[in-house]
Image (cartoon, rainbow, N blue to C red; front, side, top):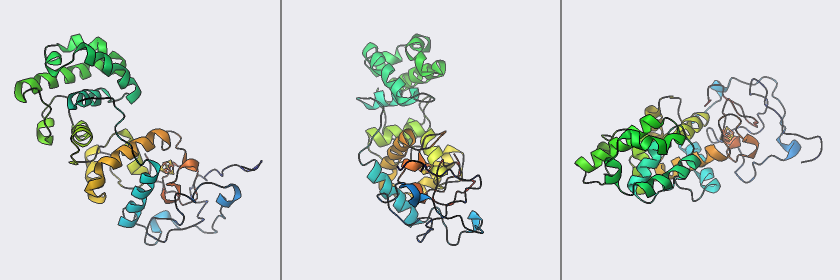
Length: 283
Ligand code: SF4
């Protein structure tokens, strides 16, 4: 970048850079390849009287063309991503996912090899009391509840499912500590079954920023995503968004100037923008 030229900061209104407006509803001109910042080229003229973003003619954030473009760019960014939780069986993935709530995958991946060496089978976990497991999972946070869930799930699996993790969402949801997110992770990642879309904190935040949903409740967000994303992309989409949330679209200061979705993203909390920002499209 030439000296003295720095990425333009968005105005409070988010309306400063209406450089290339959409042709396809919600999709600005440009591609992932040509949308990188390049000094002055990104500094667009401010319109004299910018319209309200709510009145952009023909803008539909969930138009099939826009959703397809988002999926295409995610494919380019994260072609082969999968779950970052270390596991060697459905049971290990289930435990890791329960432990990952309010924790990082790195943290969970430090803990799980230790506990799976110590308690190598579902039966070994089922023989524990939650208090016995607590010290081993303490570093993942909320360890009392997590211990209760893991031991409770093991007991139920042994008592009712022959010690096997079922590949059925209704059965999974009967296990202590297992809600739709955990069930979808196990079904999608281990069993390769697209029964729903994983909505974790990253999918929650980024789906709202990209205006794929206006909901705040994870179950409602999942329903919205299931309506607009083709079923054969449900599993990969979640993995890609989770990676995007870790690498670029981070919670506090998303790295918008490095993001190839930038010119089709109107998030109200972008840190840099060449398009209108929609104040309600926030994490
Ligand atoms: S442009 Fe910014 S807010 Fe939008 S998806 Fe990329 S990183 Fe996230």
